[in-house]
Length: 247
Image (cartoon, rainbow, N blue to C red; front, top):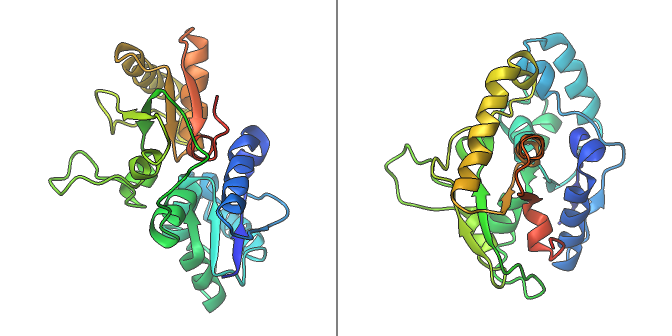
């Protein structure tokens, strides 16, 4: 298996610990991921704003770095969704189609592809709220959206439950958007901020002091809101818990 490890731009700039824990976890599981140099944007912000020409340039630029891998693991559900489901402003050559097929976020890779069933080094004896980000929930199908009458499942919870001592729980409105939305967060700050405040207050009311997710983008937004309003809640990307780095 030729395994690439891609660090999205916002992870590289703002949350490098998410990438570090993810990379170390893959190595700990006996894999040999190749770090793809030069963190880059997947084109999602430009696509969100309708700047198709600019998005195409960005997609072409990043595509040149991703060819030739069986799987391209990235510590970001929202970026994995962009590559897999929306990477379509550039010419859909066989190479591009192969990139779209290979792109996968860490949770899907661990749960579906290598089928991790043991994490003997990981311990986190705390009650933790799990936030499944909108993209991971409804595009990557990593858990059951609460609005669908289908059997319950959660790949994220399955992985977290391999960690010794952890108790996984949810906010009251478990699948409600936290207000992070890329450009939406910029253009409609009042709505985005209120959604974030509703989400972190929901954690607090339910007694959670720790929150995790497969979407670091959501955690960055929520942690900023919690800090602004003085809520004592810690936010960890899922790999930090799975690799035993969360304290």
